[in-house]
Length: 376
Image 1 (cartoon, rainbow, N blue to C red):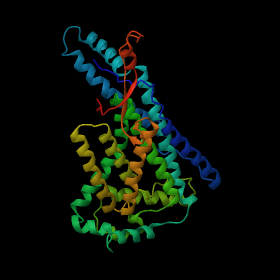
Image 2: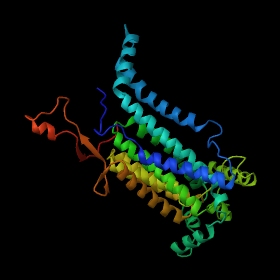
Image 3: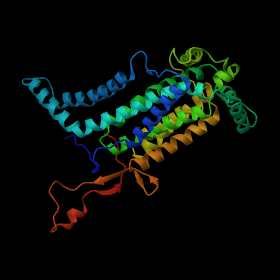
Image 4: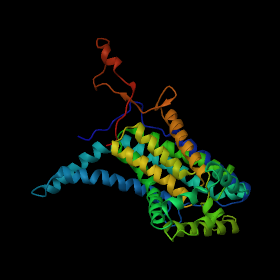
């Protein structure tokens, strides 16, 4: 049987995720009105409102279809009938109405936050025209005893094969966010854990967007390009050139040509990886998953500095932002013990009603307790 683990508190509301998305949406509208900048769809090729639901629906298919074929067994007499019956059974047990509501609520809140975040990030250079790359570079050199962190990594790892390796890390990170959201909304049956993660990512974006406006930077790859001139051409170097062209066009046309995506402080690459690492620890996923997450966190830190996307202080700020997002999202979603963020489930009683003659049954209903279940 495919069980659905209820929390006993109704469907998760994603309240803080919605608040983050609505707050960024208001900020987008205000910036658009004050600076006379058009609001844009962040995904010009395939609109996000099509792409992200498609990712979720694809994940649902991956969740249901293999179970259906395994349950139906080998093709033989009556196999198509068994296949249809098994499909209905799996769909009913894996995807009751409550989980459809959970997944759709989460993905819509998440997409609102994403679309508004992309617009606020693009508008940041118009709202705050100063750049703070030089002070951050000076702070980096202070922390590294007068040395440039990127130059140190180039000396340690070389500027050949390592550049391609760290470029690959960057590519994997790009795919990791939508995949992790799909896992949190589709494959987990512990909805409190899924709500916690999706809400934390929304907080990451909301706080990151505010920092982009308050402390605008372009990052070392643009402010100190000579440091990275020895790196070979990679996917990342081509992407950096494309992003700079987008920024120049966006600034020249006052936002009419599209969105620019350059902003360095704080590093949301690091921030979201910190969020992922802390969540997989909180829900006690398999040991290999936790080790892999922390390993990829370390590689992300190295890649962002090595390739010049971020200053080292951006990494520190990003890690702190990601940790704070996990904490505040845990508080907001009820995953807490006092002021400690911790996954909390509720123990549900059997279906029979409790009575005065069975006080122990009454006491066992909806008792909050800390728990660490893994995702399915």
